[in-house]
Length: 304
Image (cartoon, rainbow, N blue to C red; front, top):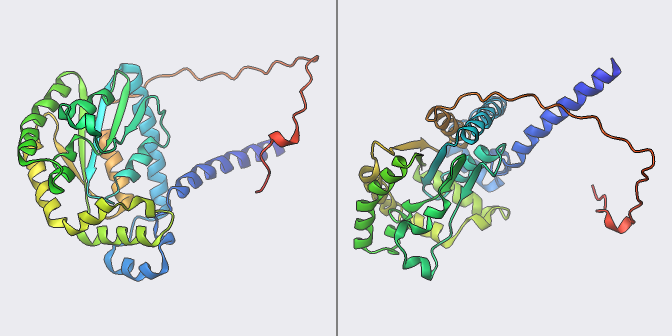
C-alpha cells in the first residue's frame, strides 16, 4: 500500500510538472501585468476562459497533436501551416503550444529573418523552398512568403510591380505545392487596434519582453490602416480553393490557441497509428563494476 501511495504521489507530481511547464510559458498572462496597465486591461478585455478549463483542453488537444504527428510520420504526409497576422497577434504563442509536446524532427518551425543582399536578387519564393517538408514532416511558418503582401508592401521594401508580380505568382505557387502532395493550411490572426496597443504597452513595461518590440512594430502602430488595407487585399486575392485562408480571432489568447489547434486537427484526416507498448528491459548489474568518483568541480552548484 505504501508503494502504491508513493507511486500515485509521483504520478501526480509529474502531471503537476506538466501543468507548471505550461505556466512557465504564461509569463504574458493577466497575473503578470504591470500594475500601471491593470486598469487598462479591465477596460479593454472580456473575461478569459478559466485556467482549469484551458489547461484541461490544451493538454487534450496536445494529445491529439501527438497522434497527428504519428500519422504524419508513419504515412509520409507533407504538411505546411502558415501563421500570419499583425504584430503581437499571438502567432508565436499558438506555435509554441503546437510544438510543445512534439518531436522537432517531425514538426519544425521556420521563422526566416529579413533577406540578405544575395537573397534579394533571387526568385522571391526561392529562400522558402528549402524549408518545405519532405515526407513525414510538418513545417510551421512563423510568417512566410506573405511578407511581400504585408510588411514589404506597407513599408515600401517592395515596389508596386513586385507586389503585383507576387499576387500573380502566389496562387500558382501554392497550387504547385498542393499538386506535389503538400497539405497547405493558412491562418491569419486578427486582433483589434486596442488589443494590439495593450500588448505593445505590456512589452514596453516588461523588461522580460522588451526584446519582442522592434522598430518595425512601432511603425505598424503608425500605419495600422495601411496594414488593414493590405491585409484585406491579400486575403481577397490569395484565398484560393486549394489553399484557403482561415481567420483566428486573437483578442483572447487562450481561446485563440485552443480554437486554432482544434481547427488544425479538424483539417487533417489523421487517424490512430497502432503502436506496440514498449517493454522496459531489466538493468544489467555487473558485480565487478565500480562507479568512478568524479571531482566536485564537475558538478553544477546546488544553488536551489
